[in-house]
Image 1 (tube, helix red, strand yellow):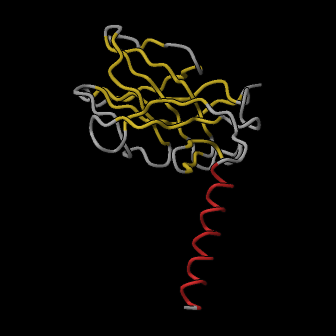
Image 2 (cartoon, helix red, strand yellow):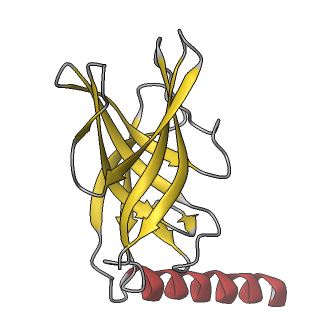
Image 3 (cartoon, one colour):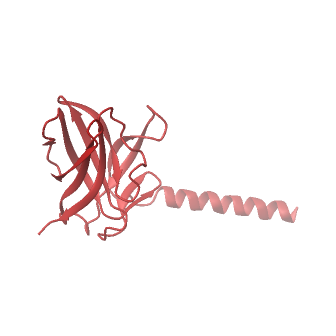
Length: 162
């Protein structure tokens, strides 16, 4: 009987702790729909750009490989600007750059402003139609890599703001 009271007490305390944590103040975050690991399934994630990162980065350097010729060209793509890739029907927009990318549950953020795990969320357009929206990782170029029949895309570098 004593053991049963102890178990009920611990269960009640765990429930109170859950309510306290779940009902506490929340940090405002903007939800961003991204594709999960499973093809076609959408999950809500939130990208949080810390104050230590905001305004500190001007552009990223993207490698674009033409699979037919085997040649790679590197382009400076300013953050937030749709940039056409010369001699193609492709243009790219970089929505976010997180220099120290981490994922905490469904929150995507940067642990610091140091480029320890650089990642860029990009959108790729072909003939004006969005064909990809996702992340490129400098240290892990094949992780969730965008598959295009002719072009390959990699995060090669980043340009700090002056």
